[in-house]
Length: 216
Image (cartoon, rainbow, N blue to C red; front, side, top):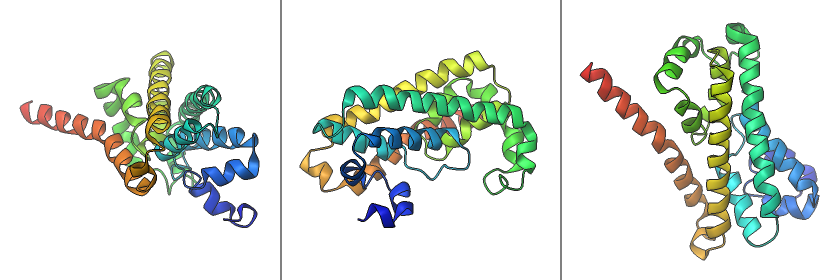
């Protein structure tokens, strides 16, 4: 792939072209990875950026010393935590008015606002941790936490905890298993598997909540 002529493909599928990015950008790759993770978690309008699969791919390249694991883990942890914090702040200060903003309407729906406080009251800080492992929801959750005015100290605790678990688990998984032949030859299936596993906590929480509602 010619990086200079296909920037959209590069950004949207950087997880699949990470080796080429490293070859082309060298040390600047770390800056690019920081920005991608920051934007994926910190900007409500960029939920389409890769998250889980990118962390796994980063770990895989670190496993063969293309990237430095001692740099990527703290760097991406900071990107994830700062991203959520910025997203929370945007939601808190824009508030409900954000749902009427013409540029945000395609990404937000009014019913999200009505359900926000109930959602966070029910799951509390767990909602922030669970959301880390759910594509799309990962980007929306901190914004909605801000709109719902979740206590910032509480949000920060779960933001940091969730960011650490998310970055460490997927990066180390890639580091340990990314170069196995079965993984390399079936990376598409691995990505699907990551997404399925990522969504499972939310599914379990939904089933649990549904059972509690029926019991009540």
